[in-house]
Length: 582
Image 1 (cartoon, one colour):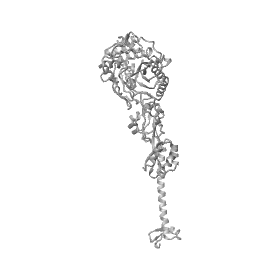
Image 2 (cartoon, rainbow, N blue to C red; image 1 turned 45 degrees about the horizontal axis):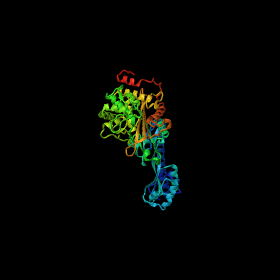
Image 3 (cartoon, rainbow, N blue to C red; image 1 turned 135 degrees about the vertical axis):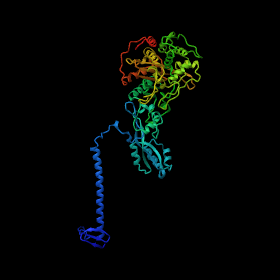
Image 4 (tube, rainbow, N blue to C red; image 1 turned 180 degrees about the horizontal axis):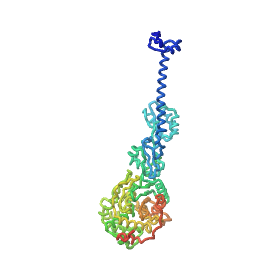
């Protein structure tokens, strides 16, 4: 490059590059093009340094603000976490105390791009060595499909992912996923339900609240209590083994607000292991199963009689001989062969006496009150697994009397738990709920008067004290209740001699009813130590007693001295005539 102009302080080259004389002396051995390039590079270097200095200043300022100036920021505890930023698509489910009973964990799925697989047989053999649950025929079909995306296995463990990746097949790829996990195993199986392969609820709470669980990050709080659920599950499992029963169900129910603290159906399944699923194990006997419940229904018959003023507690009925109605005469399991007062009808569980009570009430009033008790319709409940009762189409006199002592009407254990609560809590019906505070703000439906409820409490206390439920009478907890035994039927609907379904519903403490326990056992066997009886008083009642004894301390109920055994018939009569002020 030639010199274009020289001044006193600068040298200007023809290309327009201007360099101070002092600087130009340094480059006197370089040609003009090199000098110009060095000058341009120096300018760019200063510009880059300036940018990095600005960026570092911004980062330093932000760090200073977050750590020094922003003093109100505190370390967050797990309860204060902002769930909006948690990288989980399905919310946790917790029990009433905050124990996690369902959660979601991140996982990976492996898929294949089958378009460029040279040796599908070898790839299949290699994969089966690592993932033995894969079936070779199905795997080969996917590897030979020539599709760009085929899932091979979902929810790989980290070890499985590492080994698959180590095979070195470029056609095998991974995609992030989620897996629903149930930390308590089978304990809440029939309550929680399950999700499908895409983590969408298909049963239980998972299905009922699928939208809530997938659109909100805060945990869903249920009304159940893990400790109580574990106790109920354990005692029911022991009862099934002890009495060699085919199956069973149990419920713990808050009679004040309708919250379910425990609900168990056995046999159950392990929701973390799909291999444990079968129709029998997936069937929820507590909410889906509808059964003839036997003598438990006598509670409603007597309560309806009192409420309609068809009877008074001191009335007597003739139980000296069978009652001739329809083709089969009505008999008692353990006949007293004498006149019975109304409380004695429950204490001795007299079919003859109960039938006479309902004959005084009439079919229309019976249907009216059973409907009020929600025994003629599907129970209003959050879980999708529930069934409608099986009821007579004509409701003849024979049907009416059979229903009065527990036949001809099939209902679920959940129906019984919710409806019996209205007999003891002052006459108010609460819809059962699986959510904590699920009935808050709901209007309670009045079914029976306070007076009828008080009388029924004393009669139920008598049943548990001196009647068929005495094996559930746990000292100090003032238990009241009723047993029920109903014959099983075969596939043709014919009753099977000697095979029964037994039930016990117990409430405690009866001086201020708080909780209800219901136990049902299917086909318990006779035992020598039970004098070869397999009725509810010998199996379901003692099981209910064990549950009450174990859960009462967990519920904060302390035992009291049992009041002196009262004259139950006189007490019920005094309440009816407003003489008893307690």
